[in-house]
Image: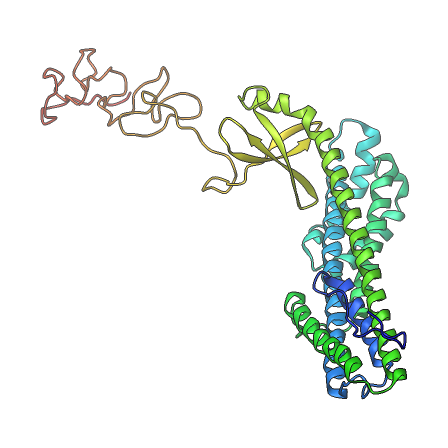
Length: 406
């Protein structure tokens, strides 16, 4: 409400600042600080210490946002390094595989290049910056043998490797140029402190209007509050627009993922032994080592699993490898395939220690190696574990004749 002097009876800041996060939060506080600090702080009942404390927190947010950008920069660099390693591995394997090719046009250039790439063996595991240097050296050496690399179809791979390495080096320079961001608080801990300082300042400004003694001072404060509300309204609109855009982007991404995954589900379900329609895509995705993974749900069991798209089909990803760490399991054959000593049969299907014809090993109830459970080897059918060959289930303390091999 306004009085007879065309001034409001009171002023009020209409919105808060808690809804904002990250860079937008710091930018908003910076705009608000600039508006308030430009006025006569005494007329606003503010002290220099109050304004300084608020501004210091704002500056910390700005630095922290830069630090977060540095973290994002590091993530991008890691992604580029993964891409670079993959290109190097493809380059090296193509050359090494073709050196034994029966095709002369592939074998000869590979033989000329293999010594070169061997001198750069293992650079994928080097420190990132050292790898960049060695990749530049490799590219210079490969440029001298462009005819051979073209013969192996490596021109595109080398061009991609050059571009990726250059992008990595550019990001590295940006990171080096940044200031030291150590010792800063987290944004979640810092933002509430900045907000509290703003609320303190806001309360003083609103009270200053009430205690102002002249119309000019009241008008100055009323105009300031109008400007503060205008800034808050503008940022609120931007935030809502940004959230709407993010929501649209998420919806489009989900729709595209469904278009990719849904047609592949029937074949995946059948191959995995599930009924048609039993497996669905939950919509969740996960990016690991440049590989996009998709979460699937089996309705009949209620369990979820992860899969990736390989060669136009879904392939389940094992998340818990066996104790051996290889992700595969060894299936033991069922009873009847082991000797009486508990040893596994050999790879050729013969019993261990036995001769031709599947002879039993000595010590398994057949010392001679040629009788069926008859230690004397005379063809009589002695019981298993019956050394005298004539007492079924004997104690094993009778005499045994062992025929030496000729």
